[in-house]
Image 1 (cartoon, helix red, strand yellow):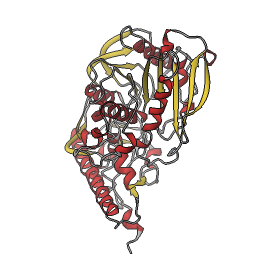
Image 2 (cartoon, one colour):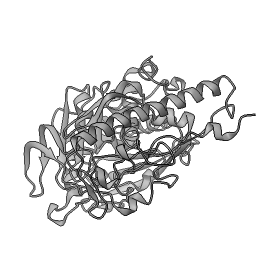
Image 3 (cartoon, one colour):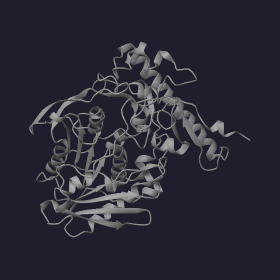
Image 4 (cartoon, helix red, strand yellow):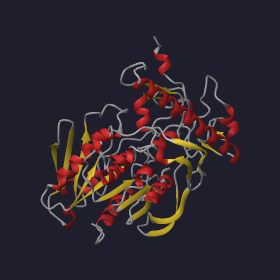
Length: 450
């Protein structure tokens, strides 16, 4: 009998010097809770909603929003009250069936969003429904939008490493618009956290981004990598990622042939893959990567004006001793999941020329994963807004997603000095939360859009 150890892969990597997401405040400064009411809605056995409605009807009341994020209590998420304060109806959706299962496939969550949309469409006066997504919820939202518009076939083609479960998502309600707030890449966000130095008991110094000799400054919490090191690192990162994917696919075939450790799934522990904001990402300590957009876009400036310009990230560097101390921690720099969970949420193919540059991301087979945000964006045809936060590292990923959106009516904008959770990273950037949701209101209420 095989030992469980055979199902545990000691694979790739470890770190992303950015802090884990902090808990958000319940509402931004622009949100006034006395402007709207809240009502708990039981949508079905596993799905619940919190409906926010304006106390006094306004022209915005004809438009409703649905907001959801996997594995999170969305009733406490800031976008809900922030949008409701502008007179819109908002349905915050929680899917409870897999809420405590981080390995649940994304298609498990999509029917709950569909129910939220269906409920809103039945409310008197609602004419349009907009799907709103933030951060890691963006890959789920983009996946939802693509399937809702074109059916499950879009996530079951031969290009995919594994196909989605089409039966769960065969009939999804179609939104009328789509908004992505500081979106992530989906599976590629996890892939970009693979540490090529974590391949054995001793770290491979030739591709160790945390080694002083390669440009990492522990005390300064920053780095300055040479082009030669970056090229070597990214090639090794892509190769290591593909090894992990191949190992997971091999284990899945054994499971399906009833030759695995268990009949339905297996533990899959990947050494050196960072979780969420952690991982081996050069762009976190070295700001020369993912530094600015390729094309000019709208910048919502701290003084209240707007300009069309190349969007520059104003984020701080991240790293230091705290990050190095996590390299051997399970659940921080080392990924504990299952074979099916990894393949559904994190598996994507990278090519030999993979790299994050100053203004682009190259060398990823976006179509190989059904949870790839850029790939699913190609199927989105409804009016769409990508709104990034310039004091974070997602302005370039946001532009990559924006460029692939299939919508004819699409907008990319960025909020100067806003962090991932909408707050200002420096006092001089002012009320960034207000600028975020005032612009959402401005974009949605443009005459003729909805």
